[in-house]
Length: 546
Image (cartoon, rainbow, N blue to C red; front, side):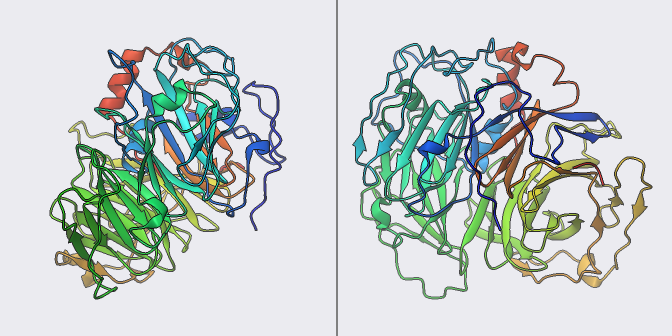
């Protein structure tokens, strides 16, 4: 059972937030302690559950300097990034945007602004509420965007105030997923996918300049679910280097490709899918149509999608338990395989594009090799479904061989068991990976059996069956720590910290060893900007060491 949060918001913005019994404010790793810095949540008075509860997802968004001569216009189109851009924006987590402030508008350059809920009428009809426009907003900052119930909340990441600075409610549906484009060239940079199948694109900067009033200048796609019979959105990804293209995955097993610079109302009918069990791609019949293509991926829901860092490959995981990897530009299935048991819920790429993490209902974290086109390791340690996975692209391997090649990867996972697990994986002997233990334990090795399935790379487009438990080497977690009282839905690694989020909409920021003692807001904007460009993050969706 999921414990429903009581929604009480402490008035103090101190980093010493009250913890539930049994939860520690730190966890240990070989590098040192990760410490709870502060938390983010939502005012319970603004929540409505008329359309049922949905799982909270989090997007981190960094806005650069205000563009000249004016802010983006309402006519600009939209953009997405639930996996690709969310991970990129995420590397900003923990970074300051100038001097820290504790006002309601937070540390991103805005003055105090009293905000009330911005409400959307029937999916696109905007209605205003009594609030003040933030006239002092300077267009810079790092923000946290998350969904709870029928609302989207926007928080100032660098203010320790728990409350968001804006909320946007949808009266006829719930927001499910969202995405931000750090490198959007014009106009809209934020996408929001709804339970009804509708998709909105907006300018985040415009929303912040109009704090507390309404959703401003939204572009509407798949209005009233007209394209796919209102199949709910499940995941959104911005196409890296796609010049305004984004992909929306749905519960009916289809993905739709959109171009943000096209109107969303043009005719976009697609032929009937002849074989629901086979992958197929259909393109729109008219040049002005949007979406421009439909990818039928599988029977049942697509639960998550993620682009490789360079945008060459697209990974999907679904209710049928399969990971599928596509060559995006060629619209071709490359490889994939089935979970040990049940559905797969999440996926994430390594920065070098060599490995993919998946997690799901078999309680395992699976490591897939693009070179071998198969599972090369299983992580055992969760006691319930794995709901979020991510590689830590900021962690430096202590045994680097000096050649620039990654010889060990650090990755993390969270699950419905309320735990965060960290893992180290040796890559020089991937078929017999190092079995890690918490500090003080003795490392052991898991041999696995060398079946013929390991010796030959599968033909292009082959979906591997579920492997035998004996055929896959096992790896144990380096750290196991209970971080929340409710089931977790995601995690994000950043240069300064690790963010964990539970499905009830409570978010914790854990500062890396050494960072908690220093003032992260002293980091210069230039250093942060360069870090963001050079190392995009992989996003995904903890007691004591055991």
